Each structure stands twice: as C-alpha cells, then as structure tokens.
Image 1 (tube, rainbow, N blue to C red):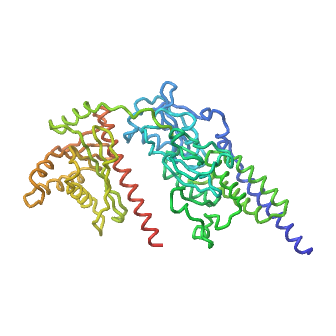
Image 2: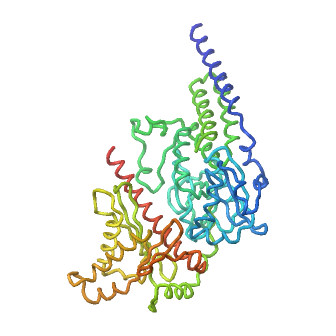
Length: 506
C-alpha cells in the first residue's frame, strides 16, 4: 500500500514538473495577445504601398486601405511576398481594389495558424469592402459543430438547413450561426459556425493538426457517416489519436469541443489557462491519466502555435457593364457576332494521375453554375496537358444538346491555344460525324488563351499576346474571373478523385 502511494506521488510531481518546465521556454510573446485587444487593428503598422520592401518575410496578417477605408484583409506565411503578388500578378479579385490602395498595414504573428485565425476574426469584425465578392459565399469556409449529444465537426461553405439538431449554444457558449451567412431562417438550427476562413486549404490543415490535440467525431448531420454510431471496436482514426473512440467520457468530450471552438476563434491563451487549471485539479485529485492528457494538450497547443507553418454576403454582386465588355472583346477578336455564352477550360493533374478538366460557363458576363461541367480525363500514361485539353474540348463539343459557346477561354499559353484550336478544327473536317449545321456552329466559336505569369491573352493569328493590364479594367476582370473559376473548379474535382483513390488503396 505504501509503495503504491509513493508511486502516485511521484507521478503527481512528475506531471507538475513537466508542465512547468514546458511553459518556461514557451513563454507567450506579446504578439499572441493580438486577439485580446478590443480594436485589433491598433497593432498594425502602416506604410505607403511603394514601400513594400519594409514588410517582413514572416507569417502575419495584412490590410489594404484607401483614405482610411478598409478595403481588404489577408493572411500570409510570408507577408512581403504575398503583398507583392497582389500588385505584380493580380487576379480577377485583386483588380477590383489594387488601384485604390494607398496604405498597407501589417502585423506579424507567431505562426501561419495564428495568422489564419486572426484573419478570420478581423474579417468577421470589420467586414472589409472587398473580402466578400459573391452572393453565394462559396469561396469561404466555416467550421461547423453540430448540437448532438456527442457533437461532430465538419467544414461547410455556408450555414444551411437540416433537421434533427439539438441546441448547442447552452453547451458551448457560442452563438448559433456565428460568423453571419444566410438569414436566420436559412441557418441550420443547433449548429455553431466559426469563421469565415478564406483559405480552405489552410483551415483544413489546421483542423487536422488540432484534431490531434482535441480528438473529435467528424461528418455533418446529413451524411451517412454521422447517421450511424461509432463501431464498438476502435477505428483507424482511434489508433492515430484523432477519434475519441466508441465510448468517450461525455463531459470530457464536451470540454474538448468547447476548447476546439475557442481556439478557432482566437482564444488560445484562455484555453491554455483553463487547461492548466484543470490539469492541476486533476493531479490534485489523483486523476493522473487525465492530468497527463491535459498536459499533453497544453504542450501540443504550444508547439502548434510556436512553429506551425468571412463571410458576410455581399448585398449585390459586383456590377458588370456587359455590353461594353462584349464590344471590346468583339474588337480584339475581330468579329461582329454576339458574345453571350463564354466557357473556360483548365486541366488539373499530378504526373498525369487523376487528371480532370473543368468547364465553367458565363452568360452575359456572369457565372451560370447550372451549366458548369467537369470531366474525368480518360487519357492515361505520361502526362500530356495538350492531349488532355484536346480530349476535354472534343468531348464537350460532342454534346450537341448543350448550347455551343461563342467564346472559349483556355487556361494556358500559346501551346494550349494551339491544342484547343486543333480540337475545334478537327470536328469541322469532312470525316467528322457532325452534321453540317453543327459544324457551322462550331466554326463560329472564338478561342483565346490566358497565361498566368504575365496575364497575357493569346489570340489566333496574332504573333504577340495582349496584356490584360492594357485593357479596360472591366474586361481584364472578366477574363481573370472566368480563368480563375476554371482553375478552382478543375483542382477541386482533381482533389476529390485523388482522395477517393487514396481511400480505395487503403
């Protein structure tokens, strides 16, 4: 009996000693307290936009202003390089505001994860003018936590309706639908939403890391995964320490979910304090296994934030003067026919594997997602982007029931343009099975390609490309928007196929 007590006392002392030794070198720096300021923008340093060389190459959050008006907030792993990219290689969205920027503000953070969380908090709090562009909000992410007895965590683009949810506000102290999104009648009752997060890849990586600290069940309430209970035996995620298992302690699981939500809202410091307090109490009450688990959570959180590399729907979509854009496009293309339907194409693959093609459709300058199409490329073997592009275009044009486009915009340069033109012209040859009227329609399709590096527009029979920066901003915005949409749509489908293949191999 005496021996057992002595061992427990040693264990008690070991836990406390380990915890105190950890906190000395991992003392929180002043930057960590950014989330504690009522006005977080007070910590920003502002410079003229010509002085980007003064911006450090560290993780952090940046802001663009014009005459005191906040235009845009972003985060970066390398502040200087990211800010410069907005001006040197502007995307469609960048072109909406870069010319207006007078001042650039920035603040450093200890890690990219901290920058991600601070960016989300600032966007939600300050609603910068250009952070939200489209009414559907599908460029932004929320972390959703269900209100079930054992809540599940999942990512969503926006709050949505579902049934069978319990109210989670009382459990976790969070406002239902936090972060905005759709109107109250359209929100999913009983689910808390933390966000918005602009960078989907970053928040997914962050959740994977945090799941190792606070294991949780995943899957939305509408998925088959959420409908069934955990098997009686531990799953593969249990063995990885990412799932709480078949029979978790209800109170401890609720605390873990509450802490996860708080960390995602930028309240990491208070979570660390609460964990430390709970660890001491558990150790004092001789709950040594629980104290050890809490100590590990404290250590893991400290390591993550020391070293780890919003959504408010717009009142209206950005206004588009399509007749003016159409007239300019007709001029540079040398045509008089109307340009109503435009389609863009992009190919996404890794070494030729899980290759996909995308086809977003714009009608009179606006995306028409009902007509979007995606293609699983059938060509196998060595990667050949040109051949893949030709396959996708040929398959698309084989669908006579789809309205043919007036304009095709290819994501790529001169080589991609040539490949696309060959695919289109091949379908007009006498040997083609197409009827004469369809061949006539195909012959009227205009094809152009937009290269990313310098935003150059390549046109048939023109030796030199046209620079988008020399075009009216509305035209440049349209071309970049449809190009970026093709890239987004292609890569999202490629990632889905890659994930399915990885699961199949398991």
